[in-house]
Length: 203
Image 1 (cartoon, rainbow, N blue to C red):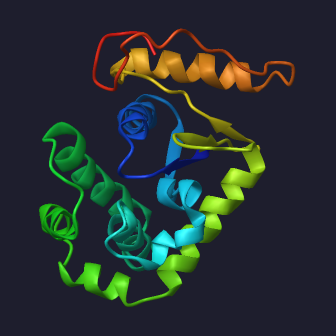
Image 2: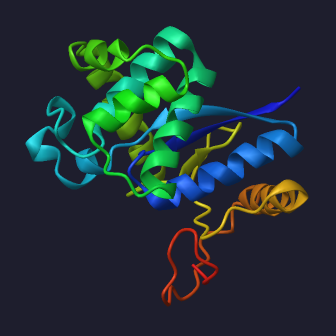
C-alpha cells in the first residue's frame, strides 16, 4: 500500500515549486502518493490584513481556486492546476495575477469560471486557512515546502535548488524519510551563498 504524504505549498513560492517537482518524481519512482495541501505566505506574514479575503493579495486567488478545484474535481485536478500555475509563474516568469489563474485553468481543461466561483465562496477561505494554521502550529512552520509524513509528523523541507529526476529523486526521498524516523535528528543547513531555485548553487 502506498504511503500518503501531504505536500503543503504556496503557489507563489519558488522553493516549494522546485520541491514539488521533486515530490512528483518521488511519486513516480517510489510507492508514495501525494496529497496537495495549502499554506499562505501572505497569511503567515500579514495576518492582520486578512489576505485570504482580498482576491488581489499575492497568491490568494490561486490558493482559493486550488481549494475549490480540489473539493469539486479531486486531488489530481488540484495537483495539475498547481503544476500549470507553477509552470507559468516559475518557469515562464509570469506575474501571479487573477488572469494567470484563469489561463492556468484552461491549460488543464478546467472551466475558467471555477476562479469566480472560488472567490465568491467563503468556504475556500476556511479550507486554506485551516490547513495553513494547522500545519504551521504542528511544526512551528514559517514557510514552505512542508511535508506531512504518514506518521502525521510535519517537516519543513527539503529545500532544494534543482529537483532531481528519476532514481536520484527516489534516493533523496529514501534518505530524507530515513532521517525523519530518528527523533534525535533536529536540523541541518548549509550556507546559502547565491543559491536560488533552478540554479546549481547549494542551498
